[in-house]
Structures are given as C-alpha cells and as structure tokens.
Image (spheres, helix red, strand yellow):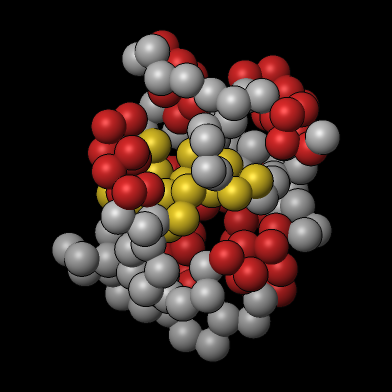
Length: 147
C-alpha cells in the first residue's frame, strides 16, 4: 500500500502541480452505490475503469466506461494514465466516477485527484466491479469492445 501511495504522489510530481487545493465539503471524494453510478452516468458523469486489460477480460466492464489503466501490475503509475485521463477530464469540474475491482485503488486515486490536482467532482464506486456484479448488474465483454 505504501508503494501505491508513493506511486500516486510521483504521478503528480510529473504533472508539475504548482499548488495544492484544500478539500472542503464539496471537494471530497464521494462514494457511490451501483444505482448512484447509473444515475451519475445518466446525468453526464464520465465513468472511468482504472483497471488493467487482464482485469477487463476477467470480469467485463460497465457499459459506457472509459478504459484508462491507472496502475501497472507492480503498483507504479501507468505511463499513459496522465495523457488519457486529461483527454476525458477536460476540466477540474468534470464529473468523474472511478471504479476498480473493489474500490481500494479508486479510493487512493480519487483522493489524490482532489487533493493534489484540485478536481472538484470525483466519486468512486464503493465496492468496485466486484460489488457491481454481486448486486446483479450486467457488464459487457471487453473483447466485444476491441473487435
């Protein structure tokens, strides 16, 4: 976990953050249930799956999610994360919902996006794709997306 935190902080050093924003009640990571994720998507939030390709193959993905791997298998920041994330999160006010397998990685990343980069509307799926599937919600096959 310590290596993961150090990796996230290194990402923000590379991005050259000039100042830190203070989190207030509006600017804190929100946790969403599966139904709340659906509502957020319907209201225009960008849903981002931060897992790796082998995880997408294993469990499928939530329909409409952007696939942006945040962490490599060794826990370091994926080299393409910054550019891919910036291409979809065009403003600090862009509503973003992150999800991973269980919610642990998105909790760390979501808090870093808020506290280090100043994003103002970041949420994460509290139980990740695992909770999504256990609650009976469908996923789409990753292979169907790449064909």
